[in-house]
Figure 1: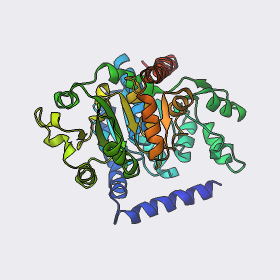
Figure 2: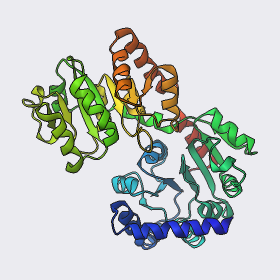
Figure 3: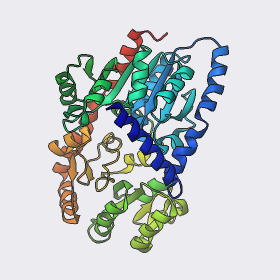
Figure 4: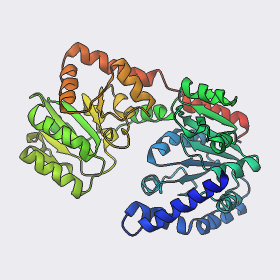
Length: 418
């Protein structure tokens, strides 16, 4: 089985290299790993001259997993600023955005998962503790950590019975789970699946993203342009939208958005190629944020965010949120809007997200598949009593699920961070 795995890794990296000819992310994936060991060698050589500091390696697949790992990083740094953080990403969409994150002592890509790369990486980093966030089960890196007896955690983990671990052919990946010293799951069903495999070092802690968004909610900046845009209107915030979302959303905004409402759209891709078609379809009623002033924005009905980084700070101005991605690989972040008590609407692909399932089951979230369902969900939320109950359900999910970071930090502290 390990030979098949090695072949799959070889084939995957070969395909990525071929894709560099026409795909930007593939090009970044390859280029970012090209000098990884040289950068690590230079960084760790400097570390060794300064004496030993407790080193934590934290690995995140992409940006979403980083946001789950971030509360742990920052809690460890607050507890002891001398703790050294090595942060790795698998995906360019995480690395390229967070490559200058100030709380990490080294930020880079995870090398392709071969025996040689795993050994070389650990020889250089020499972690005292390794933390994998939510997903990412790289066999050779996990085996190398286990062989070196490095305490290794999996945090904010989710498991479903459809995954390879629970199939008859998943023996290699089941064995990989045994490399983790402790697994912190988001919910009890995930923990139960692990216990069925005979794993005992399992704790239901919840999702560390909850702690992160609660922090953000307490310190969200204000935007005078957005305040001028809102005026006395209620606001629909459409965040991280893709063209599939916009195919439903834009006709709804033009034809069915009630007169007392305005809308902000923050596309997942904020480049001109994505923003301009939205502006053309919405016509004179829309204005891009980059061209907005306190005077002209008040006259607009639709504000289009043509930059990256504002979205999470827009939700305090909203009444309802539409979250994109549900007609593609899966919905984006629903925790950020519900931190401000916004009911959320999203497409049909949400089952992988614990909070989204809870919201749909309890009336704080609404999954739609077409424009008629979008209109129906929005019409329900126009009723004051229905809206109040839905908003309370959304906010209470966070209030009732705080504390995952604290549990993990307590475990790490008991393990022996200085």
